[in-house]
Image 1 (cartoon, rainbow, N blue to C red):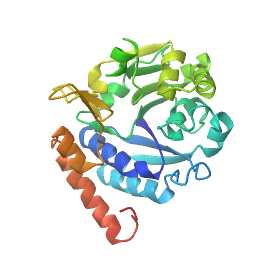
Image 2 (cartoon, rainbow, N blue to C red):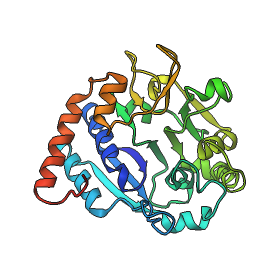
Image 3 (cartoon, rainbow, N blue to C red):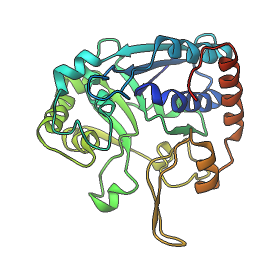
Image 4 (cartoon, rainbow, N blue to C red):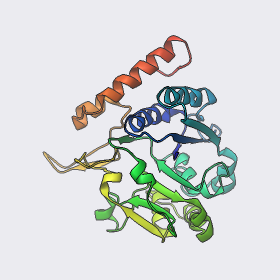
Length: 279
């Protein structure tokens, strides 16, 4: 099975579902999905966790395609409070859910080898070739950051797609080091910068495994992160896959509209039976 991990609150439900529909379209291998979430409503009322009902919805959909697919829900609220409560980066423009991925070495439910994906990832090819990467003596594998490689460092990695070897991560303590960095120093890109500093045994993926600019012929995963466009005038674009009109308008992308059609059919059917309450 391919072990996948997503992190977020209930607002990420739609993005995770769209991402998984695109992966399932191209990947024959069964998926073992981990939805990592936290209830942090005491910090901010919007920080509501992914629910068991939402986990069940996603699993039911995936099992229609492959009965061996599994979706797990893991609450890391207590672990977050132990590791990061009132840390220097709790109140940035990113949510606290970004820190779950660098707590992975402390989460017993996770298998040793797991592929972390941001919720704004769309698959265009089979992800098995990514998951099959040899991780012997390697902590993490990730692609270069499209903006960071120019603005920060030529070897600066993007944390939107990370293949993890948790045994090696535990042995070297690199995620512990990353958490310590995040606790002590306020940063613009907290966990991503901490991972770049703390992880030394790493593999650099080709861009096709985390294409952040625009789809190429060999693109496996397209990451809809912040994108810089020089023409017709310098500007930044930031539209997410669940913002369907924005993807069409800002990116002029229509090549996964079949995924959108499928997603909207599912959401309509769940609303009709009263198990999907989002507007």
